[in-house]
Amino acid sequence: MPRPIVAWYGVAVLFAVQIFSFVDRQALSLLIAPIKADLGMSDTEVSLVIGLGFALAYAIAGLPIGRLVDRISRPALLSAGLALWCGCTFLCGFVRSFPQLALARSGVGIGEATGTPVVVSLLGDWFLPHRRGLAFAVFAVSAYVGTGLALVAGSAIVHAFAGVSVVEVPLVGPVRTWQFVFLLIGPPGLLVIPFVLSLFEPRRSTGAAGRTMAASDAPELSQVVGHYRRHWRAFTTQHAASALLAMLFYGTGAWVPEFLRRTYGLPIAQGGLLFGLVTVAAGTVGVLSGGVISDRMLKAGCTDARLRVTGFAALGALPFAAAFPHAATPGLALALAGGMIVFTAAISTTGSTGVQELAPARMRGTASAVYLFVFNGIGLSLGPTVFALLTDRAFGDEALLWRALAVGAPSLAALAALAAFTGLSSYRTCVAANAGETPRSSARRGPPGPALATGV
Image: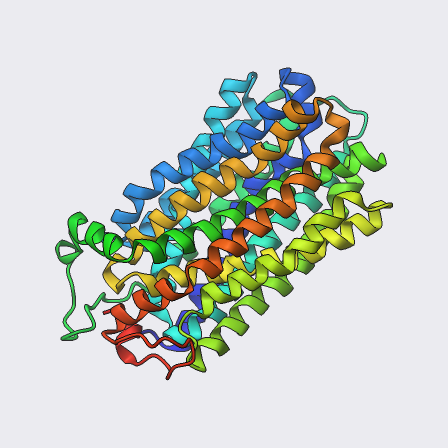
């Protein structure tokens, strides 16, 4: 493992990369109204661009990328992905139709699919198991900072160009205001590539005999499939709980600015700014709390700590998810939505670190890709669409978006809690198998030994 200063430098660089990732990903949620007007799209079509068009490409590309993570230079792979998603974000500023926007967003998804498998794999090699929660938590704060910055900066741009429908861009010509936002936010991420290429790439070891493994020593697909078959209950419940909380976070996050506008008449620039600030504050508290609490529980001997914290986070989010759509004022709605985000943010730590514990060391890249396939294929792609379909099909009136949120949000939180608590025993069994131990019936056990650190 690298020296702590090297490892934490790596976390700082990955933090910056993730900020640009979420800025590029989330800015579109502020631009729903002008995009609908210019391209003639419905709420459902907008949700497909925000969610499915992005997330399906992200999820499908993540599977082969996960295999590459176990075989080639991870900093080089992440740099290539960063260049791709920044370029495709920039191209969103030139689209003229729904299919073109969906295609450009798919390119953003493919590029961003390199991010989490690389991050999960590198952090797993840089930190011991009982310290990974804090490392992942610090890194995961960047998702909420990025989301908040996208909303705050996007709101500032929308406010600055209020009443202006067309912007004259040098060398480009006239573009719509919403297109100008993409032209601004796309290129800056390229500045981080030299720092990504400087990241420490550890020698990868089996952990058993301590020998260094070459890329050709990466596990065969049949070995990965065999591990999943043996522990399918653990993977299924862990992935389901994470994906359902992701549906809650991404689904509500995509529609809250519009909810504030449609329900309370709050201007989109003001609503986006306020929700961005709430997201940064609440997300930071939640993700750090989830990492620190699950780390302490793990160190105390609770080997199912990551999944157990996920379950409690889902229960904690439930009352806030049920209450915020019914709030009498926009301020109260934002405060209650912030309470929900505090709890849903925990998944940013417990989900990825949980995969670290369920997968042996040399399967982490592939396991992360599978996890992201489920997490994004269900959570990010279906989350925004669930609320859009409820609005368009069940209630038939865009002004009733609040009712769609009131029905969908608490249902997702309840299902996530059920999945998490159902899988605790299977989770402990899988963790013990990776550590070469026999699981005890109680969650209270001695702290994991060195074998767990290597994933063997």
